[in-house]
Length: 107
Image (cartoon, rainbow, N blue to C red; front, side, top):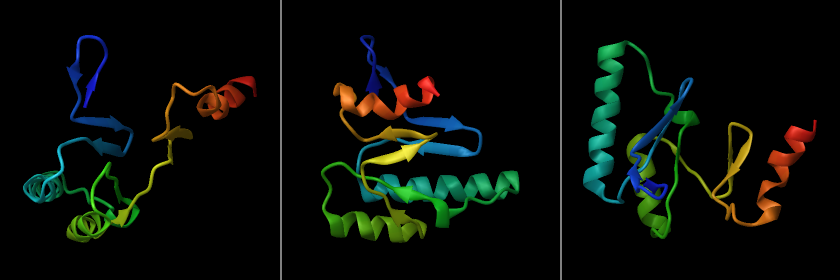
């Protein structure tokens, strides 16, 4: 994912014990991500909770995303979703999309 006027490339975001990966959609990439997460588990002694994990897509066939989610043993997520109590997957250029954010600041 590219962000900003300088087109900075972002491949993942991390916050506390959450990680979000961004990438092109292919079976090879998903298989490599599964391998990477297994290496993380083996080297750190920590476990990835796939039951709490979601796989999201943009413009991918429903059957294909379900097959890829089964590789992880995770759920297929849907846009709009809430992350860190903020909405994601909506057009943030719309004023109404910012309503939950402004309400939190007002409180």
